[in-house]
Amino acid sequence: MKRLMSFLLIFCCFFSGCAGRNVEEELLVIVLAIDRLEQGNVTVAVKVPANASAPGNGAGDSQNQAGYIQLEATGHSFTDAVSMLNATTPRRLNFSQVREVVIGDEAARQRDFTQLLTQIDALPRFRCSAAVIICRGSALQFAENQKPIVGMRLSRYAENTLANYAGKGFTPDTDLCAGRRDLDGGFRDPLFILGGINDFSSADEPNAGNSLASEAGNLPRKSIEAVEMFGAAATDGISVCGYLTGYEMALMHLIEGHVEALAVRVDGVPLHVTASGPATLSVDVSASPAILRVGLHCEAKYPQGSRADKTAVQTLLERDILALVARLQALRCDGVGFGQIAVRRFLTVQAWEAFGWRDVYAAAQAQVCVTVQLRGS
Image 1 (tube, one colour):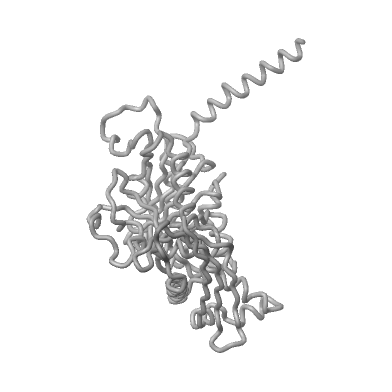
Image 2 (cartoon, rainbow, N blue to C red):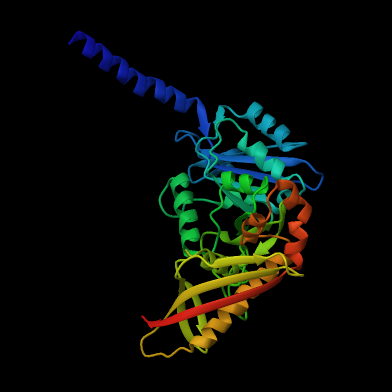
């Protein structure tokens, strides 16, 4: 009995006093933001929970946002900036709870982008499953403006928000692990979440053709939340090379077979399109130019009392998917993953590298075939 009581006493001490001291001695980073300045320097910022007993007024008030503070430091490189941040923060930084890595587009377009992701992942105890957001403009402003408008915990809010956007199909769900893996020699170029800050100057000006054919930072809406995540940042095996709209990203999810519902309008009839499964991809590397083929089976639901033309729906989807593939080819981004199919035709790594897939892909001819089953909702 005495041994049992001793064990319980040690257990309580371990999980109360020691754990409490560890939390108090560290700053839990929720958001990591990186910007490259015009002079070539790099600024790094971390968003961490503020101490509840911290003063509510004074010079630091602008940095205290709904229970979170943002700490920043600048250096000649990412490593220098992190070293300065570590040297000047009042507590040890703990990166095990990071939900978002926000990178400004100026830094993301540099040739050392892959190296930057590697350096981020090498931070002590870094949470590799953190989402990567490429921000149009300043990543630090993006992080500063981000705050939970539902609930209080930024970590849970960010996690649920990212899952919600990806589930609806308007953003990718690429995390740091997957992005590093594919940029380091994968056969499919990663797409990262596109972020931006909206000043709501375009709130009454939706896209003439499709309001979903917009990018983060320019969405036709008004809200107390200026931060937007919509569309994707494309990569070319080296760095970010361009952007995709929310509609183009929804088409990407449709090709992958797991979009919640793609909303389109054909001859005035609203339709909700879902894929029966992932698209069938094939590559004919023996042809000149090479041929990229996409075969997709979909179901389109229309409102009761309406009529939809199946041929018109198929034509619309084929046209838009063909335009998406052409857009990716122009960016030299194999976001669909044709390289995963083409590489199977080669027996050795040397033969694959000598083939020059990137140039072959950019010059290839694309063919898209979509079959649609109509159903009343």
